[in-house]
Image 1 (cartoon, rainbow, N blue to C red):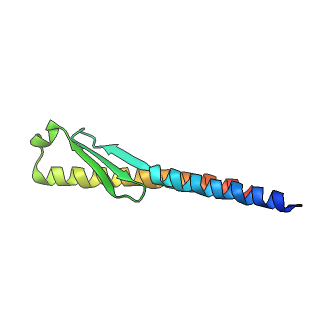
Image 2 (image 1 turned 30 degrees about the horizontal axis):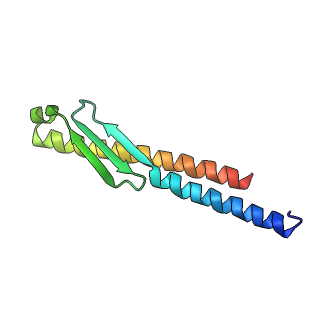
Image 3 (image 1 turned 90 degrees about the vertical axis):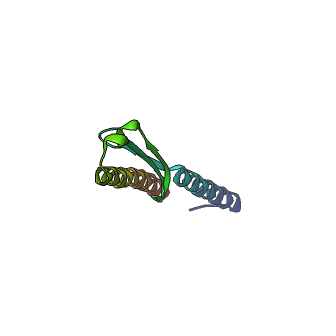
Length: 99
């Protein structure tokens, strides 16, 4: 419980700053993964949107099907990493706000 208007304003200000921190952290989330053979590297943002896709010369030794599978699997793993990071950030935020 707050005992004065100044304390209430300070509490609200701290919460607003914490929300801004949360937004900044969520915007910065990235997931990056490289395929087992090193041929494909995918990077996604915190929403799972593909931001970067890189290939090594190893793709020249892959069939079209292998290439397709490597891209899809690697991008999905990168998204999983990003979603896990987002969940960690939200969990930490919720713990701080509850405490």
